[in-house]
Length: 343
Image: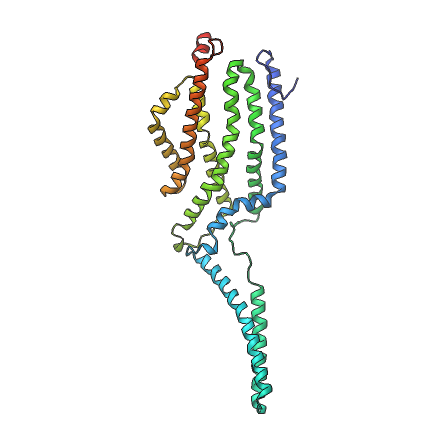
């Protein structure tokens, strides 16, 4: 019988029933992903605005980073501002001409000259108003597409990435519920907190990657030697870079899961981890240097800081669990060696 609720460890299912359960859970995951994708594709404008924000800010005209394209856009903005200032000046000049012509007796040739000057001023006013009205109001630059189908394909891909992130908690729950029957009651006490931490920490890593790491990396990379290049950011390449960077940081935020897993399985103790803290921090720095695509030390330190904090918190949490396990009775303790001896 197909079901989505977790199966008890004491239930005995045949191979066909296990396959039927797997099929049901896979179908449920697909339905959840399709539902999430429908929502994300419906809100694709908001998604694209959100993911484009770092590159828009990095390529903003106001950043003044010396890029030829941004210098041209800056020139357009200043030209439109100058045109708006010129309009009242020309109007005032025409008023002065009319005032002088009414108070001073002019010859016929002089009156013709003033009239000709006023017509030139009127033409200049109309031209400046048209130019000022046609000046772009949004100077921010967006990623570019190079093919006919690329806007649709890129939008579709971004919606897929967002849908996967949105459906991830449900997918992880289905994976956990499928393997749950293999765990005894004591093993579930180890697996359940760890499985609950995975989506929470991943989402926290994604948020950190988007709000902290991605803007710094984008600003640094687009500003590197930008006076030597006309920088055009291709949409597909930028979104791939952003997704990989954010996903890597989300995976790096799984450090507490790994620490709790190895400590609760008895592979290593919290005291040993604390004693070898220097090696762990060195490893975190290497991973942060590889994960962050920028060579500047500031971005690497920004990526390292939360990882070190998460490591210290996970060691502290592992110590608390070890103390609770030490105070528990012998029947409530569980160790990997016990299972190995039983097998």
